[in-house]
Amino acid sequence: MKYRFCGKSGLQLPVISLGLWHNFGDVDNFTVARDMTLYAFEHGITHFDLADNYGPPPGSAEINFGKILSNDLKNHRDEMLISSKAGHLMWEGVYGDGGSRKHLMASIHQSLKRTGLEYFDIFYSHRYDPQTPLAETVQTLIDIVRQGKALYIGLSKYPAEQAKQACQMMAAQNVPCLVFQDRYHLFNRDPETQVFPTAEKYGAGFVAFSPLAQGLLTDKYLAGIPDTSRAAKNRFLKREQITEDMVKRITCLNRLAWQRGRSLAETALTWVLQHKQVTSVIVGASSVAQLQDNLKAADGKELTPEEINLIEQILKIRD
Ligand SMILES: NC(=O)c1ccc[n+]([C@@H]2O[C@H](COP(=O)([O-])OP(=O)(O)OC[C@H]3O[C@@H](n4cnc5c(N)ncnc54)[C@H](OP(=O)(O)O)[C@@H]3O)[C@@H](O)[C@H]2O)c1
Image (cartoon, rainbow, N blue to C red; front, side):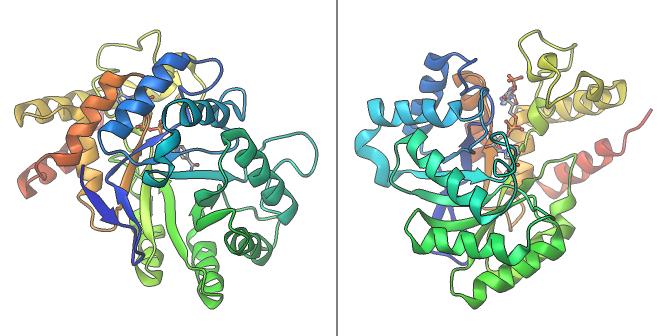
């Protein structure tokens, strides 16, 4: 495993991190979740990314991860980097969502209890809340760090302008924004123009979520929608996203990848990691085999300019 410094901080992240959004809830197979966690840790994935609402049901991913921690990894806490987030709907009523001090403080207390942790390494505002003054959200994050409930602050899915303002406020209080977390993959390049410039200016790192476009950037959907796939569940990845156009592009990307001796997943992750601003990619997985495939990107060869150019050409393919 390779590790990269997160922006200008002294904290190193593995280039591949494991996300627990899917496949760690009570509806999922706990043995598989445990096997993936242990395999990840044994192979140098030190960073595990949670949020209060991961499950389903919401909260259950934190509880299940907490069980794995206390049963199997109890003596390894200081070798691990564990993040959580708050800001999406979590419980009923006006305090169960958003970026207010009331919600963020209650949420982190609940998350610490569910995981059994004394503190999170990184705590994120999960999304910008236009109904709460930005200064209130930022001050709460700073206080969370000062109170020792988290070591570092992260921001997820913040629009460019609010990201910039939040970084200014944090820098003014000497509790800098450690990291931005946003969707970044071959089909979504928004961070390049939105948040990368702010990350660069304020010395923050960047972690890419859904780097495989929820499984689209693998060989999974080349011949239809497998019954057990995320798209078959039709929630976050919709069946209608698997268009003929899309299948054509992923078929060509897959062919190119194999011609160069890589899987498509490995190629897609390598592409993201090749951007100098990216600290880590947070992958999801539903089996140890997927994780094994994805881990190849941690030590693999960089894409050549010619390969990158061919990829760009394929991305332009339309009906
Ligand atoms: N901040 C935010 O708002 C936010 C939002 C989304 C995600 N995240 C974070 O990012 C993490 C990753 O997101 P994601 O799960 O969407 O990431 P992803 O890596 O793009 O997609 C993961 C899914 O792709 C499929 N897959 C993975 N590796 C594969 C392989 N080698 N071959 C074939 N299929 C493969 C699996 O789908 P199947 O289940 O179909 O097998 C897996 O569940 C989350 O767990 C979370 O921590 C954060």
